[in-house]
Figure (tube, rainbow, N blue to C red):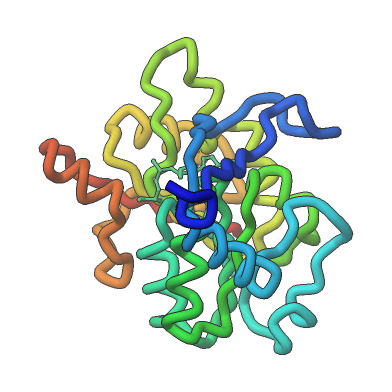
Length: 238
Ligand SMILES: C[S@@+](CC[C@H](N)C(=O)[O-])C[C@H]1O[C@@H](n2cnc3c(N)ncnc32)[C@H](O)[C@@H]1O
């Protein structure tokens, strides 16, 4: 195989916790080393400068970024981005930012944004907890977390993204009336979300029926095949 025809083995890893100044105390994701094919690497290089927002930097002016004033929603952990881009297309009146550390997922989402001609979606290739520092208090109409990493082992539970500490940050970013929407197929994670959210006087809500406007995600499909049922929880910031 000549160098020209050899697959591109560039690995774009996300920096690990502790590598960055002010990084969160705990990583909520599992670092995964994934190689991009040459074609995906080229696509990434072409589209990321257009559609990606840096994880770190100055405060974001969303109306300048999207060229309009519209409700802004952040989805944390978009995976390969199927449901994120489907929802963005179905909700043209809101602007959405999807974050994930998973490089192939961001590459796949970039391809979907381009092929769908979406103008109301941007991506963050990085840790959403770090990116949130770029957002002003009370700037989000919604935060969506669909099938967060379950961290089933007791010694890893502190890594779950829906935790008491992270909830402070989530709520501070929500406008009054803004919503936190979580879906999971781990019963014990449902209990954790209920427990941390019910401890707050400024959040109202709980388990809801599965909304038909939330597309079935890739992870959810896997869970269904394994016999797991998903639960949606919706909390409104009062
Ligand atoms: C179990 S997967 C679910 C993906 C997708 N929502 C689905 O349902 O198919 C959880 C995703 O969250 C991402 N993730 C976890 N913590 C994150 C964080 N702090 N910032 C950005 N992405 C994160 C992981 O990289 C992973 O892609």
